[in-house]
Length: 214
Ligand SMILES: [Zn+2]
Image (cartoon, rainbow, N blue to C red; front, top):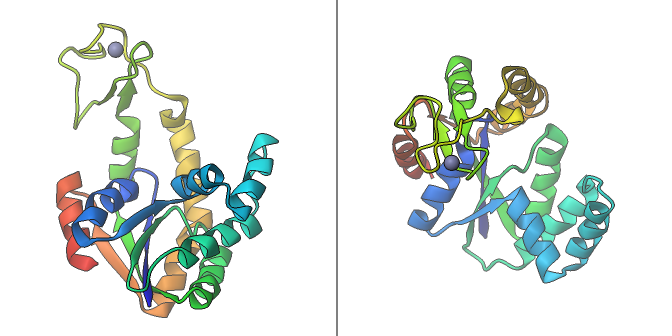
């Protein structure tokens, strides 16, 4: 049996960071949806080629193609493998479909790890990000401040806030998460496989809690 562990959390909860940090420590493979797509396209798998035709046309990859990609991925894994899914399932329909894909692929969704963070913490994390428009260096007003307020340490340029991190955009990203992904939490809660992790601490504290839970 192959094990699937699903990572859930709002934007800014740090699920990708935690999954990437813990995977090598427990012999798991971290599968972000973006990386899975790029890999399938690069390897030219049937689902990858189909996804590429949508991406080349500037469109979104439909769920049906995404599902075939997950099937291909599961088929390529050995028995006993552990996969950390990060970014999939993104809604309740995908969560239900993943159960079928897993069963067909000799796998089981063992648990869903929810990185729980208060809205205030998410807003502070996302709203505190700064980026250097000249050299691309990233900063955070609280956790990774530049030496001089608002100025890039590396090149001296004025730091800016990415469009994605503007307050109105952040609020929208959190709303999208609430409406689409929050039902996924209920799905795994009902299945009795949801594990809530307090993700308000530092990245290394969160990684330690996640490692203990998987
Ligand atoms: Zn710079």
